[in-house]
Each structure stands twice: as C-alpha cells, then as structure tokens.
Image (cartoon, rainbow, N blue to C red; front, side, top):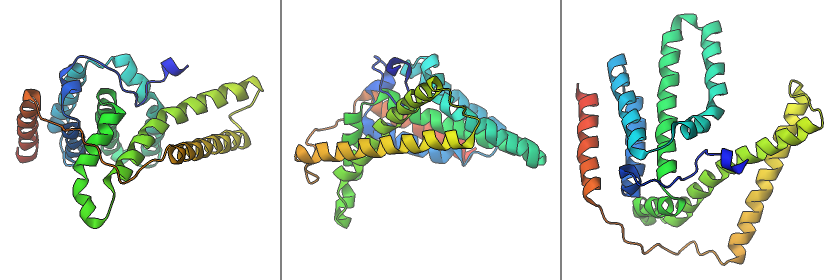
Length: 240
C-alpha cells in the first residue's frame, strides 16, 4: 500500500530540477504561485501551462505518479465545478479558469516535494527565513514544522486508506453520515496520537530549537541559468 502512495514523496532522479538549489526552488514556487493569480487571459494561462509541462519533463517525474498525487483533489474540483454548474452557470467559464489555476498551483508544489528531500527543504527554509531572528523568531522551528507537515500529508492518506479498508471489511456504509463521521473522528484521533508520539520522541532525543545547520549552500551553473530563465518568463507574462 505504501508503494502506491506517492503524494508528497521525494523521488530521486538524475535531472536538472533535482540538482537545483533548494532555496531557489522554494522561491520559484512562491513566485509562480503569485504569478498564477495575476494571469488574467487564456493565452498567458496556456503559456504557463506549457511551462509547467516543461518543468515536469525536466524533472523526469512519472506522469502516473503525478496523477496519483493529484487524485485526492479531483473530488474537490468536481464538487466546485458542479456548484458553478448548478448555481452560477453564467460564471462557469470563470469557475473552470479558477480550478485550472489551483491545479497548476498544486502541480508546482508537487514538483517541489518530488524533487527536494525533506532535509534539504528544512535547511533551505531555515536559510531563507534567517533574517526573522531579528524579531526573535527561531527559523529552525518554522522549518521543522513545515517539514513535519509535509511528512504528515502522505501519512494521513495512508491512515485514511487503512481505515476505509478496515471499515469496509465490517460492512460499513459510507453513504451514511454517522459512518463518515466515525472514520473522520478515528482519523483525527490517530493523527493527534502520531503528533504526540513525535513530540515525545523529539524531547527524548534532546531536540535543540536553537541549533542551526552549518551546511553551506552554493549556487551552480544550472542555478544561475534557472534564475535568468525564470526572470525572463515572469517579465514576459507580467509586462506583455
């Protein structure tokens, strides 16, 4: 079952995107996430979509793994589409446009998690938010919380799948609200217990929130090329 779960899991590939500096990849995701919602016409959306396809190909991510990771969101997209279709049919085109934006946003986030290890992501976030130390905010705490959240997402789906199988074996009917409520409460209980166990484990191992990573991150030739390309790409979409 765990092998079938690919959401948010790093997959090693010898690709250009994997070799990029983790700090740059996080910045690119943030910048493109903002850019997605600044796009206001079909042509620019098509160009951005083509850009994401190119990044996926450069990342050497298997399409089946990407679709598996997007599958949990399909129900939400279908539900929102039906709401537009029933209640706001005159704004259906706008609804489809909005859903496509969210799909691109999620895909960019998945590319980041597929091509960046958790440890590299923690170090990158810690380095990026280091100036917050002036405000007495501890960068390591924020970086660790984000990394734990990313790890908990696949664990949550795995627990949900196991609960569904166990309850189906007991002839549970998920069309009934009380059974849906039961599985959600059980899932929440398991996740809170996992979080508590993790907290205890960190304390027993003397987790030091004041510790800092001394790993030196250096930009390579592909990093500089990516900065130039992204800068041109954003300039073209925003100005023209």
